[in-house]
Image (cartoon, rainbow, N blue to C red; front, top):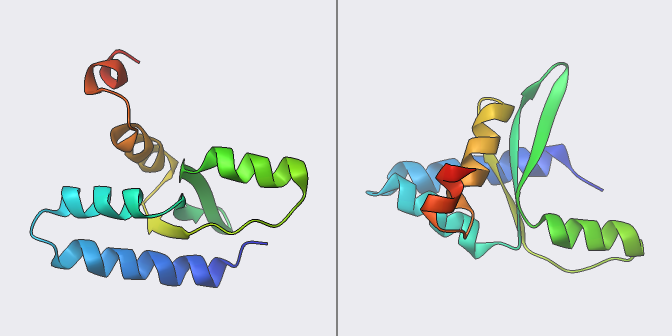
Length: 102
């Protein structure tokens, strides 16, 4: 079960880490590489929207098996779904040429 307060706290920690970094893009990539599951959170209607940046396979496996699994996770706050989707594309482990072609 997702705890939205926990996700907000995680996103705040990530924001601080990125803000103090000299290379903010590399700091963001470092955060994404460090966790099994990374969620983008953003304001949406009456609450919070979620978009999986990394770890969809892990979450799908847990959902299908209905079992508990141990995995590391964090959240990154973005302004909207479009930014979440772009962040996912920019941090995927595929070559840049393939991402641009898509």
